Image (spheres, rainbow, N blue to C red):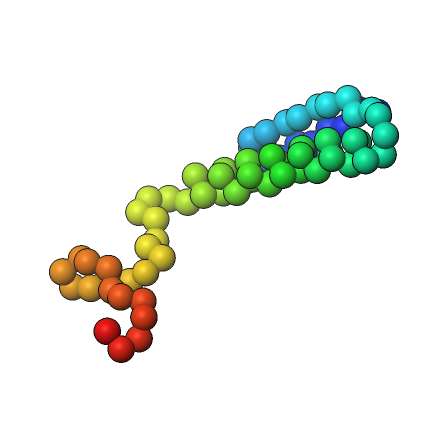
Length: 74
């Protein structure tokens, strides 16, 4: 059985895998699972790359541009 996985981000193909899968159901399931994990990684990376610079910080910066402590009471 041929399995084709195509990942598009904003209409641009970022990954396309075509693989012949055979064997037991367990082997086929594992092969397809690997393909879908790789496709998910490619989609995430392409989405991150599509964000225009400057990318937002995960933590707010203080006035002196050092990151603030995330725990309360500091």
